[in-house]
Image (cartoon, rainbow, N blue to C red; front, side, top):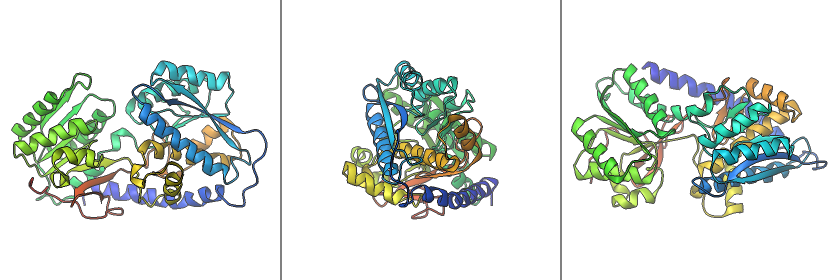
Length: 418
């Protein structure tokens, strides 16, 4: 077994053991024998993007917080007190977020604060929390910029951006040497979320002898459809075994795949950081799911059928409250709910909402969430989160790696385009 394969196996086993260890703690905190709610509410402040670039994500994040509030209050609140969110709205700008967190802490005197949406806004929120010695548990800021200040009171419950592609890399490196790809091409925008994923994958593959034949980072602000076609043509010319794309969503990913199909370029594997996970919005422009066959996409640690802590109840509660189907649940909603789970477990353990004690507890223990087990590094990263690897197979997007969660074996090499 390769070093990468052994690392993933050990890492996953540790995570699963820790998951089992904290299950009892979380379950106790939700006991139906919890005392009736009484006393002054525990006020939890957060900034929600209701307008601007992140308005859709902000709505989904707020749904997660509200759903967790309903759940915790139905089982005794925090320390017998009801939870009450203090939602302040922002326009998706760091300036407004800074103003909101200052108000929550110094004017509204909220007991606790949790994170907003996105890396950019989390950077602003975490600075205010640090100045006031408040713990900031968050789930939507995972890029390196969030962790760079090394704040001791920042805690990100989600998979770090630099880890998203690791399961794909570990799978590639787990292949027998005579089947392992020899060359790889990388293309990504300079987006704060996509480029770290690409560079982390490149570092691992470089170290294990998979040769780079193309690498380009282009401006996210100036990218057009022509940009993606030009990048795709350059990749085709390099003729790699594997293509790793730092895509932001449906538009750029579809443009790449369409050009590959048009030029009859069929590498042994293609993975894109975003886009293939958007269902028929991705497959429709391609001509149907058969044109997506074999395309990989990483996943940050959750899907509706995941066998994670409280997930079945969460999915049921979401559909009951907001309607739709489990497939309509946004990752933003999952991240917010996971924040609440960690907060609840920590407060229950120390029997206090004192921020200084809470910060100590968050650094000392392991927690469990919809996204799997959580353990925080000094800078706030979740060190034991593991990405799932998804692939389009027979018209469905399914889990194919790690092995303990796989619904099918990965298709490798990728089948030819129809």
